[in-house]
Amino acid sequence: MAHWPHLYLLIFILILWALEKRFPKVMERAEENLLIIVISSIMAVSFGQVIARYGFNTGWDAALEFNTVAFSWLILLGMSYGIKTGLHLGVDIVLNAVPKRISKALSLFGAAAAMLYGLILLDSTWLAMLGVDVSGGAIEYWLKMFKIGIGSDELRYPEFVQEMFGLRPRVHRWIVLVILPISLALLSYRSLQAFIDIARGKRDMLISGHEAQELVEENKNVLKD
Figure 1 (cartoon, helix red, strand yellow):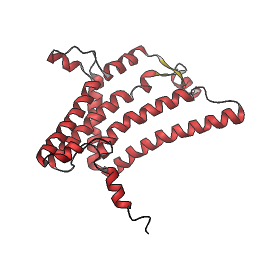
Figure 2 (tube, helix red, strand yellow):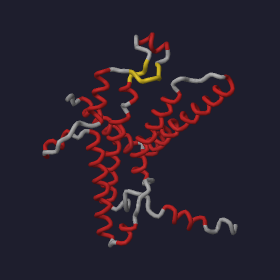
Figure 3 (cartoon, helix red, strand yellow):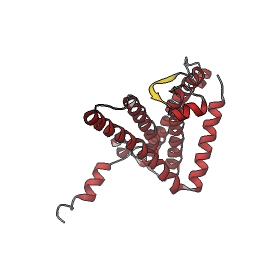
Figure 4 (cartoon, one colour):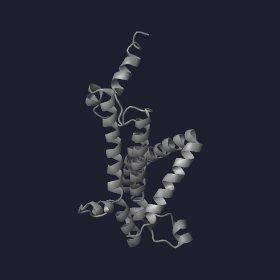
């Protein structure tokens, strides 16, 4: 299997790490804005389809596929963003019931498990060295789509793009699926960051703990005011 996707993903993560070290606020807003753009595009296409269909008896043939792809991008990008910001909900009753040292060890185990999970889904071929029967991962699947070069079901390139680059009408499936290796690389990277932060005492756990309880405490006197 070709290893150039692994190299590109590594370079991507290193560049991301460097940019976040140099411009932390800018990169944080950029990641948030990317998620906002994706979810806003879903809303805009859905609203436009309703107006077009019921108001003008027309519509965009690729709307359903576009929204499906955009929603999958939102979920896949949201995995790493949730770990980065500590937004993932989880059951923390055990972490809060055991001594601080054991709670930290369990949190470190959770972060390591999340990182391992991302790496296995990204490319599981390295497990063959441990005697595990595996069949590739996201990188191998994406690379197969890249080599085959098949198009998506309904999504089409704009005509000027087709003419400019001599492309077939349908958007290449590998472009739609490029989010798979990228998002899993981000998941592993964010999990590694969380592991380091937990080890250094900068955060307590991988998940969001007592979020609802804290909101109640913060707003319990709102009605009195």
